[in-house]
Image 1 (cartoon, rainbow, N blue to C red):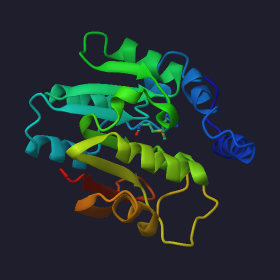
Image 2: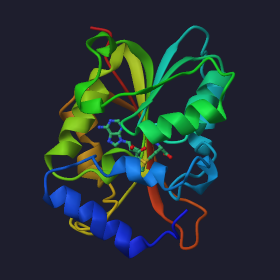
Image 3: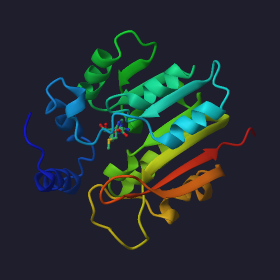
Length: 222
Ligand SMILES: C[S@@+](CC[C@H](N)C(=O)[O-])C[C@H]1O[C@@H](n2cnc3c(N)ncnc32)[C@H](O)[C@@H]1O
């Protein structure tokens, strides 16, 4: 595997974004891991503790969950172990290969799909949608489109959990990844008409610590 070069990575992503190619670079990150899921630089190889807490308090039996941009699959696995019927997708075929090889005997439906053009049968079909760090790697109009598509996957009465890096409005505008500010994440409520059930703002345990949001938004049953 190539040594990870943060500056080269940011330059590569920026070039794609400037060419209006929002996601064509994603597969290269997983390809570079050469079949070893532990070598994907942005993977924590564990689920967010707030996701695990949510799962432990939820009655998962028979509920359908979907994981957006699932990467190497830890969150899908956590949800599946807790009893959810899990669909887990990524635009990167190499990521999905890593998931399938990693979780050979799982019941998770791992598949390659594009959030921007997902199968029509997925519309409002999931009790629980899990979004972790996908919006923040996108730029411009694709962030809005991603949020709208994520919200459209939730069944009436279902929820989305959103986990992301966060920033103060007006700061870090050119960062890669570009964290979400409060105004942007609030669009799940203001634009998509979901109800905020919980909102957590916290610093993780990295050195230096990185500011995050973790929120649950629910779709009305009407
Ligand atoms: C920063 S990674 C996060 C991966 C994983 N959710 C995690 O937290 O480790 C963002 C993921 O979103 C995927 N992705 C980006 N755009 C996508 C799209 N339009 N449809 C599906 N997956 C997408 C990328 O391939 C990548 O795996």
